[in-house]
Each structure stands twice: as structure tokens, then as C-alpha cells.
Image (tube, rainbow, N blue to C red; front, side, top):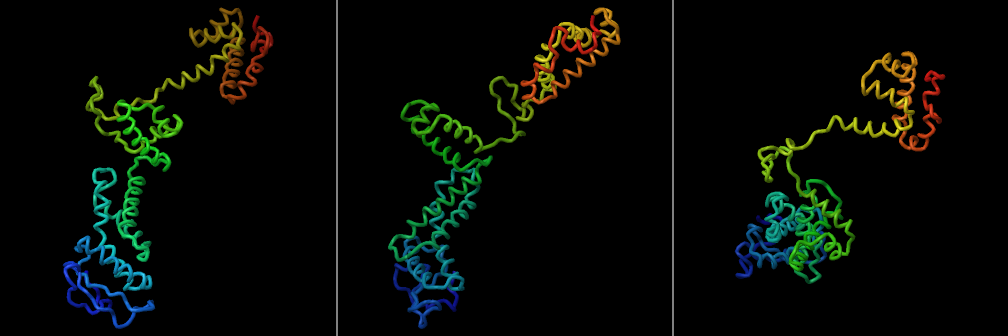
Length: 339
């Protein structure tokens, strides 16, 4: 990159080997820059900021930071100086990315460099050259923080609260340390005592860590010993909904209601739906007419249906009053049809 002619300060010869192969010295400008109250800080001419050696980049960055403070934000010269600082210090980003190369779930290396560059830009905008500290001391935490935030926000298969994401990291570190200390995998109680948490919080963190990765339902499963799942996807091995489950729930709801009926009413239902006898056969066995059997069955079935559809809380409160008291039960309401 070359300094545009309108911004360069009469490029001169090299000042010596310390200037680096990519930098050339410059004389102060005859006129102070717009927005500054004194003489301009001399800026070198840089052909390619990315090719500047790290040692030279530190020295040049000091000059460019001082110049950046004198310029008005938004001007073309301010943009040039700021862009040059970014390109000269990209090596800090590449250095900060190295520890994260093995973490493949966060994207390729180029993505991490772009994310780290965001941290570098934030550090440049916040750096104060008058504080007498190295720029790298401020930039590295910004760069690493942006990369870690990238992993935190993009590498989870299921979005979980930040509290649980951080707890997962603490649990991983605690497991590693306790395993070496105890010479065995730590229990939930061990982790809770080490992290000063409750066992419920530790379990919550362990469960949440399962959301960090996910598997495809169409992925083929490995053989786990019995050979039944080998060559099949997870979707093939998942159970289907049992159609008879609803009948089981209905039977469990019906059982206490049947206990409220009289022996004759339960026998009538058993003969009609268990033995599948006709109403005439039931009447002959009970010594009543077919019409009486029809009315009693209609009344009992309506009572059971209404009770099952009623609100569960209301059933618990009024179930004893729903069936008529007395040995005759619901049959008494039939007008003495049962003899």
C-alpha cells in the first residue's frame, strides 16, 4: 500500500536499517493537517503494510497512532492511517488464532481471522498512545475475546443460556483437574464440592453440554455389540408411537368409575362388552326385559362418558356424588326397572 500523494509528507531516503524494508522516512509537512493545532507527525511511506516485520510494525504503529489522534474522524487521511494500522498489525490476529486451529466446530481458519480482525479494530479505536503501554498488550485480549465469543455464539447446536455455556467450560476444567487428583473420574458430588455448586446445578450443566454438538437422524449408527443397529440410521431405530397407549390411559381412568357401580351394573357391562351378549340374552339372564336392559345400559354409559370427560380436579371433588348412593346405584334412577 502506498500513501496517496495528497497525504504523503515529502518522502525522503531511508533513515537506516531500523526502518525496515517496507518503510521509507518522511519529512514533516510544511503545513499542519486540518484539525490539528501543531506540526504534523512525520509519517513514513509504506509500500505494503502487511509485509512490515513485527519489530518494525511496533515502531511504525507508535507514529501512526500519534498521527491518528491528531486527525479528524471521517476524513480521508484518518481512514488511511487507521487502515494502515489495521494491516500492519494483522500478524497479531494470526498469532491469536493459532490456539483455536484444532477447534473445527467454529469454522475454517479464514473465518477466525476475520473475527479476530474485528477485535483488532476495536483495540485500535480504543488505544491511547499517551499511556505508555504496548499496543499488543491491549490488542490481544480484544482479539481473543472476539474469537471466544464467536465460538460461544456459533458452535452450539442448540442455543443455551450463557450461564450454562460458561458452566460447561468450568465443568470441563474441573473434570480434568479432579481426574488427575483423584485418579478416577469425578462424581457429581465431587464436581459440586469443587465448584461450590449444588448437585442440581452440576447436573443442569452436564445436561446443557449435550447441546454443544448434534447428530443427524440420517447418519448410520455404529454397532454397539448386538449388531442390530449396524447399517441403520437413528431414525430407523427410533420407536414409533404406540396406538394402544390411549386405550391404556382410558382404562386407567375408567377403573375407579366402574368401582362406583353396583354389582348388577358391572355384570351387565361385562356381559354386553366382555361376553358380547345381546340385550335380549342379558335380559333373560338377569330376569328383566330387553327394554329395561337398553335403558340401563344407556344410563350407565352416559354416566361413565360424562365422568371421564369432566375436569380432573372436579372429578376428584365430586366423584363420590356422581354415582347415586345406595346399593342400587345408578339403576335406582331407572324407576325400579331392576327387580
